[in-house]
Image (cartoon, rainbow, N blue to C red; front, side, top):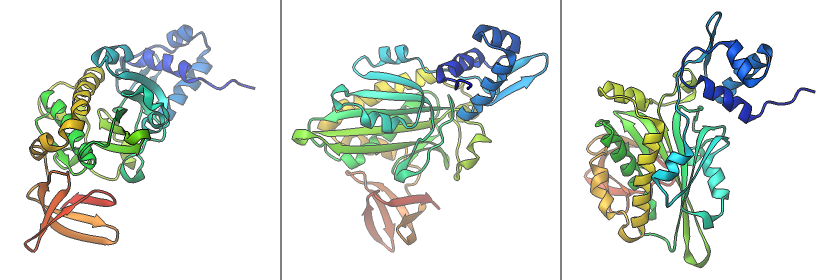
Length: 326
C-alpha cells in the first residue's frame, strides 16, 4: 500500500519552487530522492493547497506566483513578549489558538494555508497557501476591558495605520470589521472571547489580509475584493514582504492590547473615523428579515454604528446585523 505524502515532503517542494523560477523536474526529483513519477504526484498534490504550478517540457516546473514563507524566528524577534507559532497547514488558526492554554498568552498563530478558515457569523474565509496574511492572536485580560465590543474597530484602525505607513493611502474601514480599498474588501477581522476564572477575560483576534490571491481561486468570493499587492502597485508602490508586514502588524497589535484595558475605545474612535468609508453615505442595514436604507453617521464611544433615517438617529450594535454600502 502506497504511503501517503506528508506535509513536510510537500513543503520541501514548495520551498524549492518559491522563487517563481523554472526548476527542472530532474533536479527537483534528485533533491527529494524520488522518481520523476513520484515528483509528478507531489506537484499534483500542491493543488490541494490552492497553489498553481506550471509545467513545461524542457523547462520543468515553476509556481505561477512566487511566495515568501513566513519566518517564525524573525517574527519572534519582532515581538519578543509574544509567543509566535507558524503552522504551514492547519484547519483554522482561531480554532487552534482557542484550544491553546490561556497561560501561554499573549500568543499568536499564523498559517500558510487554512482548510477551514472562517469569518464573521460563521462564513467561510478563503485562505490559499502563501497568498494571505492569516493569523489569530490570543490575549488574556485580568478583567473584562471597557468597550470590549469596540475592540474589533480598534484592531481595524491598527491594521489600516500599518498599511497606510506602508504607502497604501487608499485603505479604509467598513463597520464593523472589514478592511477595504474603495468598496473592495482587502481583509477582515474576527473577534471571539470567553470569560475565565476570577473574572478574567480571554479574547482571540483573527485577521486575514489578501496579499496575492489568484482570481480563479477566489471565484467563490461573492463580493468585490482586492489584493494588497495590486492596491500598492496601483498606488505606485512596491509590494510588501509578508514577514515585514506581519512583524509591523504584530508589534502594533501588542501595543494596542497592552493599553486597551486602561484606555478602552476612546483614543481609537477619532482614528476610526479617519478611515470610515461609510460616514455620510447611504447604506443598507440588514437585520433578520428587515432590510432598510439609512444614512451612516460614524460610530459612537462604544463602537456602535450611528445611522439616521427621517431625521431620527439610532445606535446599532453588530451582533446579527450586516451593513452594505448602497
